[in-house]
Image (spheres, rainbow, N blue to C red):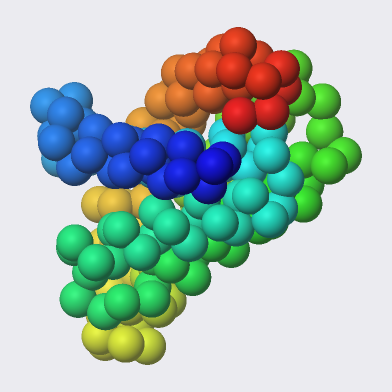
Length: 164
C-alpha cells in the first residue's frame, strides 16, 4: 500500500515539475523539484525507499522527456540511495543537512548528466554547461530546497510521525 502512495505522490510531483514549475522560471532555469523531493524523501526514509523513489521518478522523467531511457533512472536512483545512506547518521529535525545534501545532489546530478551525455551523445563544452545550466540551477535548487524539505517534513510528521 505504501508503494502505491509513493507512486501517486511521485506522479503528482512529476506533474507539478512539468506544468506549474514552468511559471516560476528565472532566467531560463526552473528548480528541479523532482531531485529535491528525492533528496528530502530519502533523507526521511532511508536508502531502499530513496532508491525506489529515485528510480520511479527517473523512469517517469526518461519516459516523457529523455531521448535515452536510463540516464535519469540511474542518476535519480543513485542520489536517492546515497542520501538515504547518509540520513542514517543525521538529525531529521535539522533543515541544514537536507539543504546541503540538495546542493551536493544538484552538483553531482548535473555533472553525472553531463558526463553521461558526453558518452552517449557527444556534448563537448563543459564551460558552457556549467555556466548556463549548473550554476543557475544550483542557486535555484538550494533556495527551493528549504520549501520542499519543509513540505516533506510537515507531511511526514502529520502522516506517520517522522516517516513519510
